[in-house]
Amino acid sequence: MRSTLPLQSIPGQEPIQVFRIRDYLNDDSLLPHRHHYYMLLWIREGMGSHQVDFNTYEMLTNAKFPVAEGHVHRIIQPPTDGWMITFRGCVFNALHDGKGGILAEELF
Image (cartoon, rainbow, N blue to C red):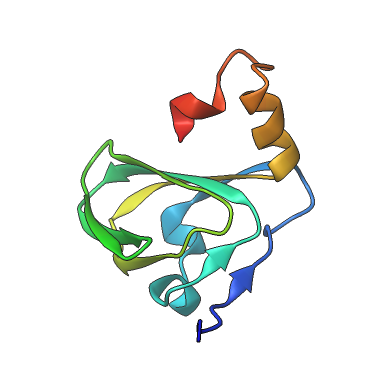
């Protein structure tokens, strides 16, 4: 039987949002969870570790971590600072269709 993991909604109403990681992290970030949105983590300072679909990755300065909608992830050890970019499925679909000058495959 599959266990139920928390499914987080996008933090605000805008289709694309940018947050400082150090300002956004909370206790829920440390537990395995899924999102009902897409996210790109960009580590700008320090080191940490991150788990995506139960694979652990080191978070080093300038590393980028895409997290697709529905992927299980958690922060094991937070980095000092960085950015979290969240976007709705409609934005991802537009990127997938090549609109906006970047392709979704380039991010994911």
